[in-house]
Length: 237
Image (cartoon, rainbow, N blue to C red; front, top):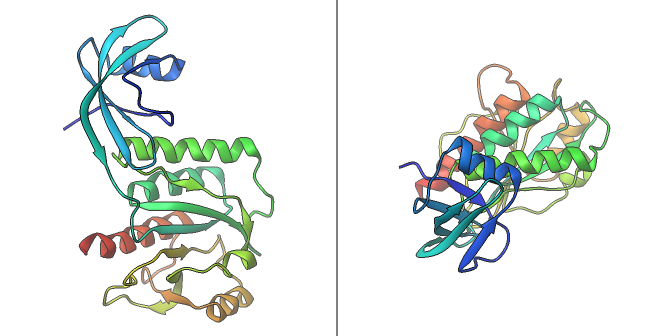
């Protein structure tokens, strides 16, 4: 069933007046919602509340809180994706699709064969907007976070219950690959793959190598497939 959702990071008051131009335009001109129709607000921290539209004006939309709400505890198993800095359109695709597939957090990184330039604040804010919009559209209650870009060597030292790296020489998955509890880190290589030194570093830091396909995948394809694969095993439980 279709429902219109708005990301609302503030408190859920009894009545709220929405004044953001983009939000008002979407409600009034795109979705054409009218008085007494429902509008769902989610805070990105596990809670969603249903409101009803009380008044639509040229620049604002006034809504009144309903009793209906949805809550979700933070997942016991969370998927994190480490992705290399690549061309912008590839990152856009990774963020959008992997949010839909349950990724909880994203860690951009710089490696030997990736783009070797830290992104600007404006670019990171744009990435976060893409992730927020994907969460809104996919009915998620928890907002994925884009973490600060780090170096490859710093990423692989992080502690997770399970650390996975895609590799053409990895093992074919024949059984559940998720831990009994804890978070999972998935790392995909840049265009041209990880260097031999980086593969050695991954192996020395307890990464498991998995074979995602018989052929070489693009960065964004590997990221989406790996995220979907891990999410599938988590969702089966």
